[in-house]
Amino acid sequence: CGCAPRRGRRAHLGVQQTHVAGALFALRRPAQRLRAAAAQVSQSKPRAACASVRHRRDSQRLLSCAEAMSPAGGAAPQWAVVDAASFATVRVALPPGSAVRCEADAAVTLSHGVEVEGELQGGVLAGLARSLLTSESFFTTKVSAAAGGPAGDALLAPQDPGGIALHRLAPGGDLLLTSGAYLAADVGVELVSEVQGGSVGNVLLSGTGLFLLRARGQGTVALAAHGAVHSFDLKPGERRAVDNGHLVAWSAAMPYTTGLASRRSLFHSVASGEGLMCHFTGPGRLYLQSHKPPDLQAASSGNDGGRGVRPRRSRP
Image (cartoon, rainbow, N blue to C red; front, side):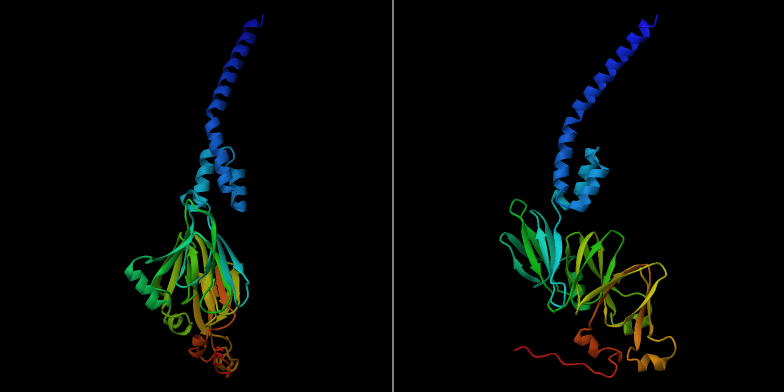
């Protein structure tokens, strides 16, 4: 007569409703954690939006994403370049519990509650290598906001006037820095000194020197330059020639060679005043400075076009 199947269907629906009610009850606590995680990552709008869309139905994955976005479960520092011209500075907003590292004597001003402490990053040998081989400071400065205190900020500046570029470092995307290019970085970034690979010509004629500073890890790196900073993203196989002495940083996986500026002849390279140039091949990113530092101008391979080195003006 069909009654039994209908009763069976009603019984089956009752069981389903029981399971749904139980599942909703079990999801109450994860839902609370989901809301807490969404509030936690909301301080970083671009990444939080991505996280909330991708993980809105999975509280555990959202919490993991939030923890990966900001170390120790707190919000990450926010970087911004101020007066991005020849006298640039970088302002770092420090949420409670966050910290950054910078070169010694790079702090211009700190808000109330922000602490500074000297660190020997990597140990004594690493500090000696940075100081003697890449002209960086022996000690690094850690600027932090207390975990239980208010948010703060720090204004950082390099020793010499010039521009500042912010590079977002990802795992596996190491960056090579020339001497004096490092200003500051997130605590998730590691800096090590290493011997420059490649040919002898790159070491002697590129203007970058024998030793370079490698930045690896994850976080933001602030690069200091002499004059304005220009960045170029090279596609696979794309080539770009750079006058020696204008290099600031480049992707570690991007090869380059040092050769004549003109492919036609030595005469054209010398007569043009360019002499030698570094030839990069993509893919990768280049950071260049618009002007050579005075010490590099004096040691340049005749790339002044006969103009000579103009002396610095004495301070009043």
